[in-house]
Image (tube, rainbow, N blue to C red; front, side, top):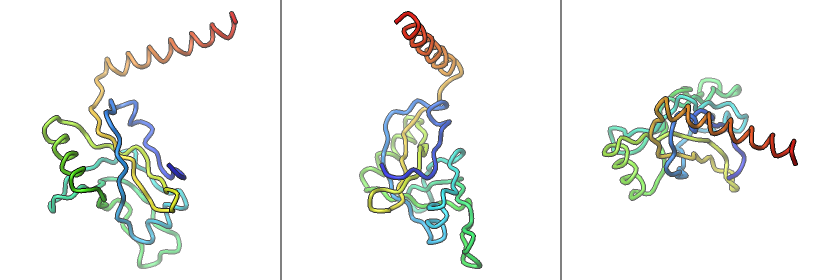
Length: 151
């Protein structure tokens, strides 16, 4: 993974992530320039199936580019995801049959300078799952502290 532009930090807290997939994005020129400036937010974003049967990234905010004038893009427009047909069908099946959610984890530029999206197949965590995770995290932190002190 190359230079990270936007990250969804709450995704790992709110969801149990089962697998991750790298997907391409169909972007306009001003969107790419805005991403290179690091002006994107995918905290409330998700992927869904559009009318044409393709996957789309919905509710991701890529700020307007400063030098874009009248050719600027709409900040919250749905953006098409580029995946192999087999992967796309499998993801759509998972999201419809098993109730999984397609959550974006991060947007980044790969080694060739192409914008990519790390997409996760996830199920929502229940409140007690979040509490258990917090309890375990606190215990690990305490254990590390004790190990450092007692040596």
